[in-house]
Length: 220
Length: 242
Image 1 (cartoon, helix red, strand yellow):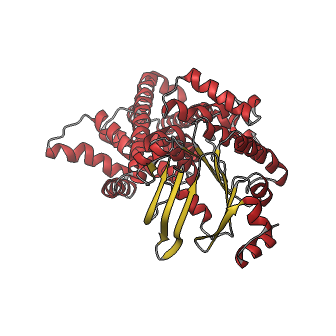
Image 2 (spheres, one colour):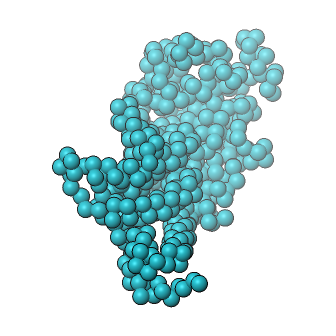
Image 3 (cartoon, chains in turn brown, green):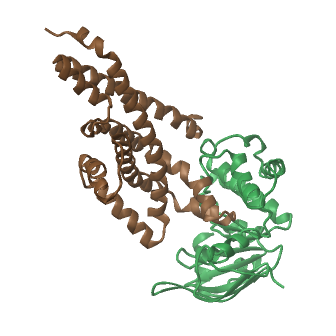
């Protein structure tokens, strides 16, 4: 017999977990995207050495498991003197991870900029920086916006792994509750739906921001 | 003293010798048409005049300033030399008004109000005063190209380089753009056009430069060049396009 009512006494645990997941994901998304834009610019337009350094970072992160990155930051770094709380280690791992993936996505957008846009900026007397930030960047991000949205959602869902280093997120809450009342089916089903809800909410938020950012398309 | 001085300019793409010693002087107020078959180097020459392309030998000065491809120098040159492209290159995320105001505000440091007045005046000049708040993608090709002209004019250039600016347009839209150019010519703007519009070159242009195999093959007053070509290459070319 299924008994969802058995979860009710633990609702505050779920809510606390949900808040932690939202907090960390929000922070990781904002910081990860800011770094992603920065690294993408460095990768695409920076000096050869800088571009190579960024590339090594991107490939390192994209070709290793997230959980290993997380364990390295939380368990590995203290050996060389970087002690971090679980919350800090988890957030940093997510930022580092999203930054790497978004660097590659945003770089693709920058690379697809027609040469004519750069030349138009040039012949109007705009500097490289002015052309990049006033002319190139918005249409470049527009092109890869769906991919970027998906990546951010993937990273948010990936935050479930943080429970492994005892970050008290949503998955941690589910583990905790089912270990107390042995209602694993109910516990994980509810948790799954909460993640689904978060993912849908996030996509909606991205679409809303996109509509504002790319309002010149909505004009049609 | 000419506005544009081109002296013995050579340009190579690797082993390919595309400009083979170009000499050309352009006086203020002149309308020069550069014609020739594709691959003759005419667009390359135009793009050398404002630092978009590097040349390896010789020298170019515009308005007394040396033309190089260094960013600083290109930015200085941009104040004297405007350019319009075949593919318009308007900024899609900015309105027509913002497209025109961008460079005057951030490069010339004009106030927003001043830039707006200039933008409106320039749009009026190209016959698109009502499109100030439209986005480029809502305009026809001919309208986009006229906005591009207005955008270049807003920088108050001494010379306007036009790189096949009607080649991407539907035939019925070409006339509107040419009319704007004709008006500019009448007002004394110095125009250097790479063009396939031979009638325009003949009727509006002061001088025609025929390029062939990376050289200025023949040049002279527009009407004369078309009526009385001296070389076989130009004769063949004129016969094939007129």
